[in-house]
Length: 312
Image 1 (cartoon, one colour):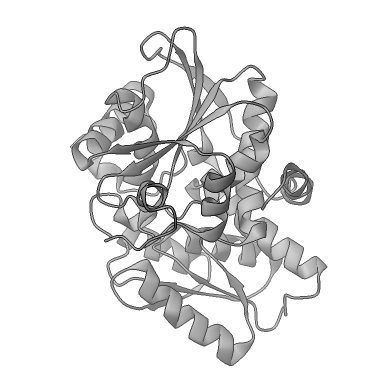
Image 2 (tube, rainbow, N blue to C red):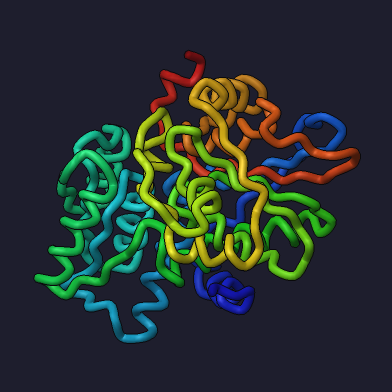
């Protein structure tokens, strides 16, 4: 399992390359108080930039990153953006495999970072298989979207920052797709007694289904958040974290996600993509109800969206 020491090492390694995002007070929810972690302000508009830099920098330290061959990633969009951005900053080539239905805004940005974009299949699992074939043929460094130790530890730095800004936080609310962000936050706060609320769309319940079955299981990939939370099953690190310290697992439907996205824009001018709005939706729709005086931090983790749709 990823440890707090891994997260602390990631923080030191990536600090020169990433932004320390703000934690801002928001309107109360129920009887509790609420803060929003503005990770949508990270480079590339997404939390995954932290893990991408940690993966590539750590691999370079270990002699695993060939600067002539570079990196390969598979992503519905955000992990590809993050890894392409990191590779460009580190001066190595990047090839990113994305599903054919990946949002145009994300594909265009990938190319703007200098990445070679390969379209493959209709969901993340198919892009992943194509990426693995390229890695086997070229020896490129594979950068997983969510399930490698360096990736998870990088994401965990968000939890360290929340603790620094709000030491008495009771609960952290996080969206779950493949579970990398959740596992990183879990490592950052392990042993503190802080509750983690793991939020998933009803249409893609990877962690929720695994908890019910007692093991990771495949789920269908559908719904409005499929482009960023569209993993077919919970990753190994996410599952290890859940087995060790069971989170509060809640589900939100597409209507609640879209309503939360509109609310984040109208009330805070946060341009959240649907996956990022899922965490806030758990609070706004009452899937998770804070107790009296409970101090809650919710992570707004990504903003790669078509801004023309925010008011719709």
